[in-house]
Image (tube, rainbow over all chains, first blue to last red; front, side, top):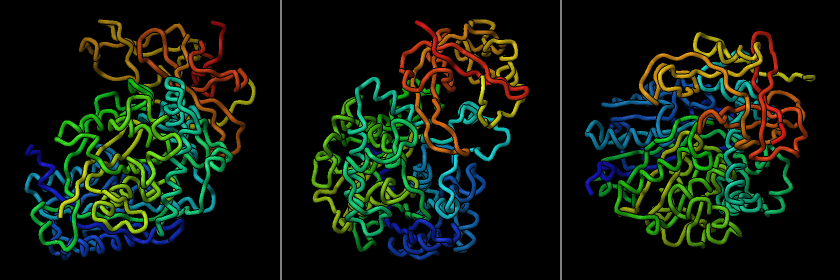
Amino acid sequence: MTDFERRSIISGIGQSAIGRRLNRTGLDLTVEASLRAVEDAGLTLADIDGIATYPGGGSAGGGAFAGPGTPDVQDALRLEVNWHTGGIEGPAQLAAVVNAVMAVGAGLANHVLVYRTVTEATAQGSGGRQGIGAGGGGIGGSMQWTIPFRAYSAANWLAMNAQRHFHEYGTTREQLGMIAVNARRNAGLNPLAIYRDPMTLDDYLAARMITTPFGLFDCDVPVDGSTALIVSRSEHGANVDHPVARVEAMGTALRGRPSWDQYDDLTTMAARDAGAHLWTRTDLTPVDVDLVELYDGFSFLAMVWLEALGFCGKGEAGPFVEGGTRIALEGELPLNTHGGQLSAGRLHGFGFIHEACLQLRGEAGERQVAKAEVAAVGNGGGPIAGALLLSRDG
Amino acid sequence: MTDVPFRVLPSLDETNEFFWTSGSEGVLRFLRCQSCGYWLHPPGPWCPGCGATEFAPEAVSGRAELVTYTVNHQPWAGPADPYVIAIVGLPEQEGLRLTTNIVGCPIDEVVIGMPVQVVFEQHGDIWFPLFEKVAP
């Protein structure tokens, strides 16, 4: 196949400090991550000729969620770019990577700085997580169909998807809990993870309820931090002193109605479309994948992605993860090897891409998966989703 | 209905006012295509059923089936007793759904598939369509 994806590699990766309340600005964190990624890619700032983020400045949700826009980062680093973009509409957080890969594939740029920055922990302060719109005031657009019914959070919306999955397929909290228990186990081997203390299934089940069937440990942990990636023309791989992640394929489709309650199949939502699309753009198949980094902003979403990407049958994610051996580091399909957003922190999609690159490069330390040549990444949940297939090169 | 909870109110405009005020007449209305009868929700300018552009709000029966739900325990907007958020499906058209609340029945009696009927909760000019359990 000659799809444009394979013209790109992720040549460098970098992260800022990551923590619960760093009290640093998003721009400060972004610059830290970006400089690391540029150096890791064997480049200098003068080589960077493109910049992309998700969602970026001016996006709904506010600065703590959105991170700095590309004009701010371009200016801070005095970049001269041929191409620049940011935005919230696209295949979830992966949209920024997709845009970078398209720009490289189209010849608009050679090395694109792609970043995602959050400062949600500092913004939240000590008051706990607030619901969207909970401050009052009128609400319009698509949010008017959920928020006024006291459904303030994606926790509520996705809990209903999970409850429907439980109803149709007999999925249980004991099965769902293995996503969180597995993440915590892996986080124990990740020095940068937020929650590293061991957690049993009983600990998980005993946690306070948030919105049925989600308890506290089904919800990810807000953090401050920035992740930067350098998407380069594939030829650059030969210049780098470490293996790189080659972009094999991307799944960007959205076929069902993009709506929390009107999407046809509430047990899958948009991941179904992005997952199926991914496999149309590569000769690889699910059996070729060595490890998976699947969005777990809420535990249930990782189960959705396992089904959507074809690692198990529709409705079978519960039995697939039950007991946790199959998805463990030494299992047949290691899942969320860094601890996911549930335990390593809510870097909002990009933490999974960063971890996939580390694993493919053989740089994941104590949590390194023995055979790591192909990795699948799922970003997003509900009505937004993007999928990425990466392979080791070099 | 006693103990009306805090709610974020929708911003009314020319596209949604009929929906949010319809409860003042005791009925739930959706936009309906005047050519083919397709129920269009959320409101929009074009019928995916037939391509027509003429719509009018029309009343539905108010009956529905519980498609899925969650019992919320988290105080997103200040302290609150646990309450039920749900998605209901309307019999008028496959896939025509509303996010809503189930009220007037003990939480442990809420089950997927149960029949429900619309009731309205008034907040000024706005009438929220909520649903109560009814006998099959």
